[in-house]
Length: 164
Length: 227
Image 1 (cartoon, rainbow over the protein chains, first blue to last red):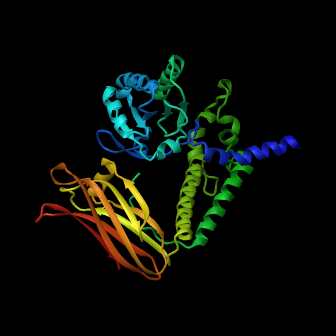
Image 2 (cartoon, rainbow over the protein chains, first blue to last red):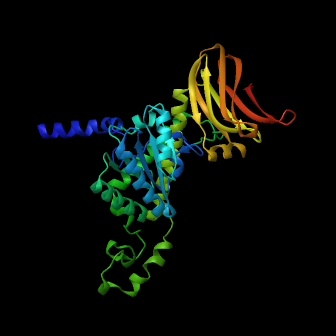
Image 3 (cartoon, chains in turn brown, red):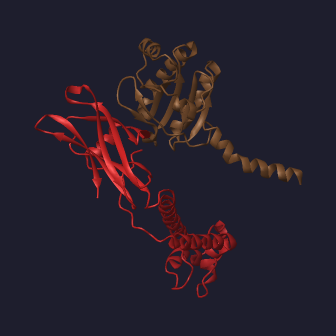
């Protein structure tokens, strides 16, 4: 009886949990529209049907630079297959972010989130944080770190997503 | 995503409930009698409609079983329709129900007596590339929308976007719209448009229109009250 009650309680709280933790694999990626450092505004929901990678970064984060450069390689390799990559800046200092962006030689759009609204939507608690979104607009993987292992796992998942 | 509005026929709330009841009844029938899809209509031969003939073992294939699809398509009148048709019918019912629920939700959230809606439309747009619109009603920000090139293109092609819908009390109100974008010679351009309006009992529709002023070679912003 207690087990049944516990199971019911868990089932009852699932929607609330899902509402709280937006960046959970299997959940529809929250939509957003942001200005780009260079180029037109970007709205996520316009990319349904494409594999999208969102990487949250900050100018004061060394690992973010390596992460963006790794994503640049992926973008060059898989861009023609429908991969879209967006870097979202969540740092406080916009000037530093601009100079950081100039220092990285990425060709994919870097977006600005000055109000941190999108960072809150995706529960960004670590930088860099990468979110992989499938062609149906659902979150497939959230990587809250950057190292060789996570990069390999990310690439494997990307290949799977692009093949779907 | 840009929401382009189309006129919706007002439906009585009762229809929604009827549709829901019909859908529930359909689902209940599906759950209660899954075998009924394969159940034979009385006059049909057993070899045609037996569930085992759907995927028969190779040894069991007979000329009568091979002819089964043809016989199934020409089922007698009054027989249970094929599964595909039933599924399509259910999908259609679900879509209808979803639409009715949306209309019902809109009516509940924004009753006709207090409803106020602001639409955005664009005519030409040669002198102005829209980037964002911020709306304030009585000094309070109610909407802030960032446009992508696809959305701007939809507006230029004649689309009308419902940017805001909310509720207001009867009385005098002020709507202020701040528009940002690129003006003539690709320069940053920010302009405002204001409208004082009287909200009476009944829905109030306001339209923010962006047009080209050919004489001044400048964009023009107007807020129109749909009387």
